Length: 105
Image 1 (cartoon, rainbow, N blue to C red):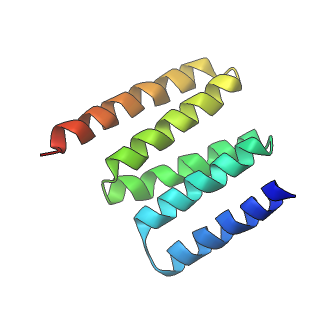
Image 2 (cartoon, rainbow, N blue to C red; image 1 turned 60 degrees about the vertical axis):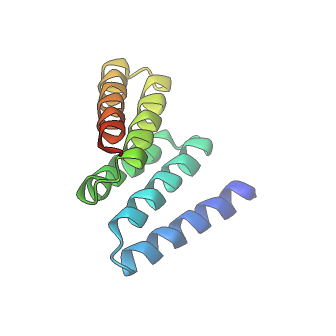
Image 3 (cartoon, one colour; image 1 turned 180 degrees about the vertical axis):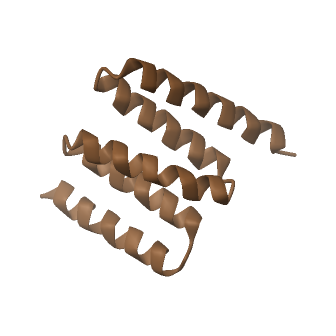
C-alpha cells in the first residue's frame, strides 16, 4: 500500500543522496526512512535508521534537521519504554536546537 510506496521512495532517495555524496541529503533521507519504518511498526529499524542519520548531519552541521531527528528518535524510544535513552536524545535535541538558534544572525 501507501507505506510500501513510501518505503520504496525513501530508499530511492537514500541511494540518490549517497551516490551524490551529499551527507545532508543522506541524513534527511535516513530520517524519512526511519519515519516510514516507525509508521510501519518497524520500530527497531526506525531507531537504527534515525541513529544512522545523525553522523552525516553532524558533519555538515545541519543543526535544525539534527535537532528534529534527535527529537523524533526520543519520541520513538519513549514509545518503546526506553525512557533513559529517550530523555538523553530529547536533552541532546534541545542542546543542538539552542546552538542552532544562537548561531543565527
